[in-house]
Length: 197
Ligand code: GRF
Image (cartoon, rainbow, N blue to C red; front, top):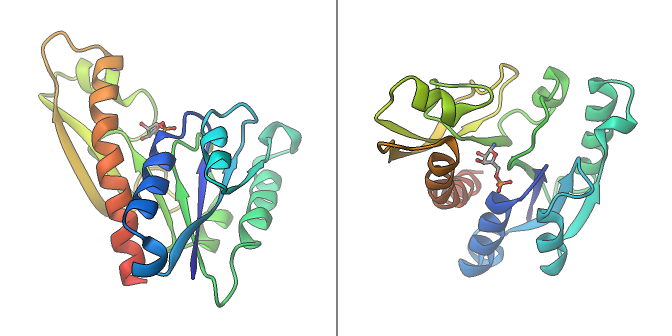
């Protein structure tokens, strides 16, 4: 059995989409994989409630309780590695996890750490992607699933989805349109990664 550990900071709608896909498509039988845990750096992340309602182990690790980024990442890796054994290798899925991770952490999970970013990478790495796409006059926007490497939002691309930027779009409207596509491509990309693993 492969253990999927999902890291969130907020709403957790991408996490929920992955959990639902794993249930609907019987990943335990087809892939030998299950969502083993959801970890949040924020105690009030709405997604935690959904995870608990699905019987998934949850944990809160408040980054503010650690002196620096390296200390937080070390504690985070300890939590994750509870689910990482030779019989149960872990896949770490970042789903709206709003923390920059240290190279040490990223390298520890090389090839088994994925992220979704709400832009068509390599365009608009970083924050405020939707407003930046609107301001640049883009006619399309989208989302990218990628392997995580030490350089922020730069790892090998696994999947992308494209949506139109419509006249009069606000960042909120565009974000909502992109998010519907994120919920489709992220579970599919995780499925394909597990299939290859
Ligand atoms: C998503 O747009 C994701 O791409 C970005 O933050 C948002 C998180 O949404 N990194 P959710 O927490 O999955 O609902």
